[in-house]
Length: 103
Image: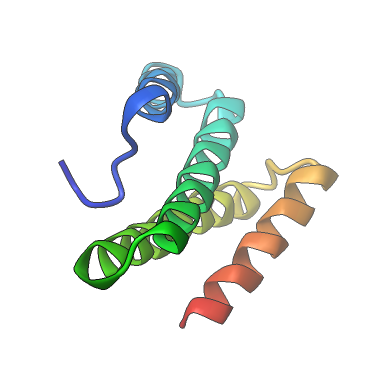
């Protein structure tokens, strides 16, 4: 399992949307939902990082960054296909800004 792999309910949601995306390559909505899941994973790990310290905090922050980057990669893929709605364009820009802040 890679560090950015979601756990718990997020893992179930990610697995569902990944399976849909694999089985129906024309279903961009599942890829968009998957990007949202990874954004939520990032937010969750950032919140966990606020409650711990040391190596555990660093692990959560690293996972948060990786998850956010994965979400951005998915949004950029959809954007290149012209498959993002206006709302999702705004979400992509918010994620892009957050990734830039992390770098």
